[in-house]
Length: 598
Image 1 (cartoon, rainbow, N blue to C red):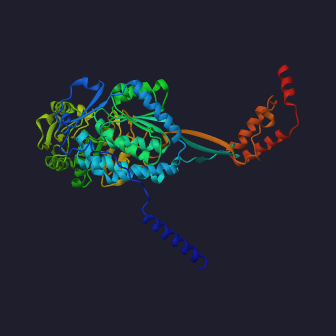
Image 2 (image 1 turned 135 degrees about the vertical axis):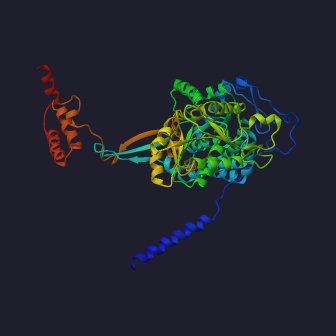
Image 3 (image 1 turned 90 degrees about the vertical axis):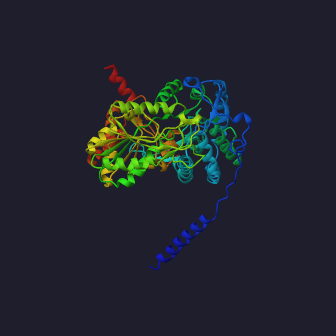
């Protein structure tokens, strides 16, 4: 016992010291980012004080400039340039030059970059959320959940584990290579190209940027034409943080434009990460095939939300409404198909109907509203078309939310949260991605039927399964063909940034997030070297040296059995044969020549 006391005291002292060190705040530089031109203080310049009316149809998808406006109010925000093919090439070339220097940076410097960003984000949450809200129409709460928390969690995971997963990883060398060391090295790919969607403009920029920069890459991010105004401000935050650590100023670029801009980016970089629609994802794959670069596609979703009969209905109803309102034009992973066990179907519908009726949509920065505007112009027409198709085929509207004070110029930017019952899979609403605040609810009678319904979709991004039995929920989720699953929760997996994120089928392939996403930004290199160099080196056995001996194949047969024989006795017998052949004195060249002449 006396022997253990000193060890226990040392361990306790070590723990106390670690705790005290945690109390010392780290020295992290602060950065200042000019936000004077993005704050709505009521004193906008005259040229930016009017209501903007976007062109309808495809005419808004081209031109030399990208017009920006608030979808919740239609107030004009200004414009950004639509970069040409040559301009994109020039930007990528600058990033490539900067990346060659950054690839030599230490993990200590990379962590400092992340800490500077984290410090700024925490201090300026309201500013970041307000800018996102103005550019996309989402509420401040939705912006906080989807922009701030997710990004902070990713930074925290990279700070805690990022270096660990990018260090060389040693692997077993196998029986035939016991004298070798085998490892995997993770080197930067070079320049990553990211084409991101509009639904979460802050996080969609920072998500690929953080992984790319931490793994030693440069990155060029083409932001959506529907959220370019906010993206340009968020880029300033990154530039300021890079300057604070003395990193190359051109390491990260944010570019704006339309399809031509994105096509130019795909043809110029070493890997593409795309977040968007399946149709555009297919075009990106075709373009990437020209240069044979890797592609990660995070495409559409039509997530199934399954509710078994043994749940707390009040609890799950609240989560369900949150899940569907998150997809009110702002969340690519929203639940869009609700399957409820017939025993609690009426009760569940009653609960969500009551909640939905209390939901009010309106300009998020004007008043206290539960839901904001649709970001994309004309999207309400698509949603109305999906609802009408369902109604024509026998569905019924069970409830709708209400509108707050909406200016007449912005009426088309809103769609009331809607509960629809008596739906089936013949309806477009249950097959096409809605990207809106619509909750279609369908009955099921057995777990097998629920799984069959959930898998009856061309999408496979995520699913959520609720049951009073966790093992039952796990069993159902395990049978659903999707890349992400949440048990008794919704979308919780994305907040676990150690996990990969992505889908299957028309929801895409490849992963970002977690170890898989971080290493996907790397050239994965397999390396083998001598374990006891220079004392033990590889030497080709005499029987298979050139010219190959007459018993060369016989030697190989015995060697294979000595290494991989089923039983220890088989291996020992074969090993004796190998040693015999190695010690035999013969002339392989002469024997082989004579044999060929015969």
